[in-house]
Amino acid sequence: MYDELRKRVEELFMDAPKTVKAQELKEELTANLIEKYDDLIKAGKSEEEALKGAMAGVGDFSSLIASLKEQYEPTYEELKRESQRSALFISVAVGLYIFGVALLILLAEVFGADGVVGLVAMLTVDAVATGLLIYNANSRPRYLRKDKPEEEDWSPADRERNNLLRSVKSILWTLIVVVYFLVSFIFSAWAFSWIIFIIGVALEKIVVLVFQLKER
Image (cartoon, rainbow, N blue to C red):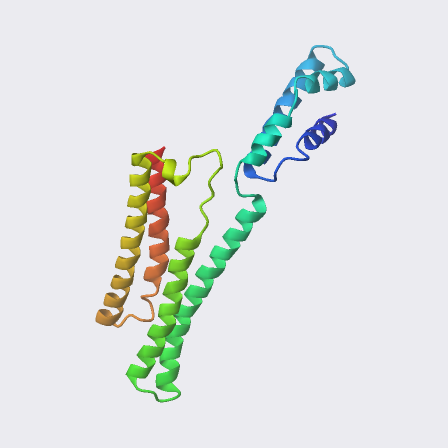
């Protein structure tokens, strides 16, 4: 009968959007119905009676489904695509940093180019890689539910917090780029200094997490 309960719940959520919130509600309802079904069985009800008794308490789900449709929330497919997109940008950027070092060595050792030409070529490749990382960090969609206020309706504290977060992220990436060039030029660490940008991505995540924890 558990399968039958799950089938009934699937039918209730047939028209619901394929969002994380809808999936959580469906799983919660299924667990509650199974618990109620088991209680009725223990009370001496037959399987059919227990099934009907459990489903009788569900009520009308149309209003709940309507409210789920009115919310803007990423689906599993959207989250998966966004994760794959971000991973692609970061992978390409890291590959470009490594390619930049290889290009510097190749131009110097194979083609006999002077150091300036090789350095300019590597910096050009590194600039593209840096641009990809910055673009990826700042272009990821921020999913907001429709039942949350728009930015112009936020309280002064909310606006101040979000403006502060944007400012901190902007300053962070500016400092990362400056540190990258300083370390690379002073220590001639072009073969390894690209790791600074990977650290920068991690630092940005930490900054966002700190702001989120503070908000909670």
